[in-house]
Image (tube, rainbow, N blue to C red; front, side, top):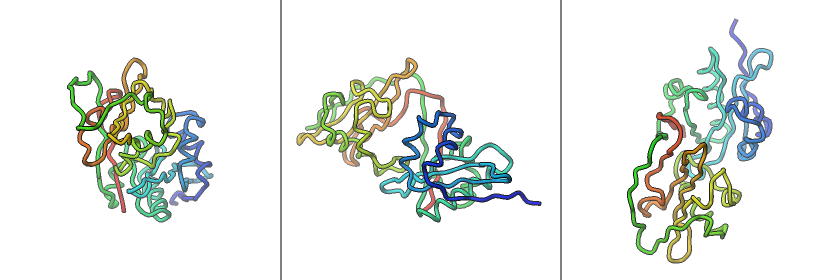
Amino acid sequence: MPLNLEVRAVPPADLLPTLAALYGAAPDDLAWMAQACTAGFVALGDGEEVLGAVGTRPSPQHGAELVGGVFPGSRRDEVALALVRAAQAEVGRVYLFAEGYLFPPEPLLAAGLREVGAYRRLSGRVPYRHVDPPTGVRLLPLAEVPDPETRLQALRTYEDRVGHHAVTSEAAADGAGGFDSHLSVVAVDQLGRGVGVCRAAIEDGEARLDAPASPPSGGTPPCGPPCSTRSTPGCARRASRG
C-alpha cells in the first residue's frame, strides 16, 4: 500500500518549528525568515508526520526563493518535488538553493528545474590587492554613513540578482544580520547616493564577507569579487523554474 503524502498550505508563521528543525537553529533565530514569507506549505505523511516544509520569500526580479527543505528519508525526492510544485502553483516563478541536506538537486533537475548559478564558499587568507574605486566614488566605513536611505540604496544594488531577496528597512540598521558597521564598507557617489556595499563581520576569529554589490555598470564591488572567507569548500546550486 502506498504511503500517504499530503501537501498542506499553512500560514508562514506556522513554518517556524519545522524551519528550526531543518536548519538546526533556535526558533527565535529564524522568526525573521518566517515573517518574510508570503506563503507556506508543509508535507505530511502517515500520522501527520512532517516530512518537509517550504516558505516563499519574495525576490524582486526572480519570483520567490523557497526556504526550508525536506527531512532525511526514503521519500525525500517525492516530498521535495511535491513541495516545489505546490509553491510554484501558488506564486509562479520560484528558485531554491539545492543544498543536498535540504533539497536533493538531482530529482529537481530531472523534473525540469535548471541550474542558474552556484555559491562558492572559500576559506583561507584573502588575497590582498589594492583596487581604486571609480572616479567620483568614495569608499567609507558603513558606520560613517548613518543615513538609512543611503544604506538602503547601497543594499538594493544586489536585489536584481537571483539568490537575493527584497531589502527591508531593518537591513539598514547597525548590527543587522550580525554584521559590524565599522568593518563593513559602503560606496557613495558624488551625489551622496549609496552605489555599492560589502558587509563584514568577525566570527570565531575569521572574517565573513557578505553582499558585495554594485550597479551593473559600477565595476568592482567595494570588497572585490563576491566570496566568503569562512566555511568549507563546495557550492550550493541554485535551481530555478519559471
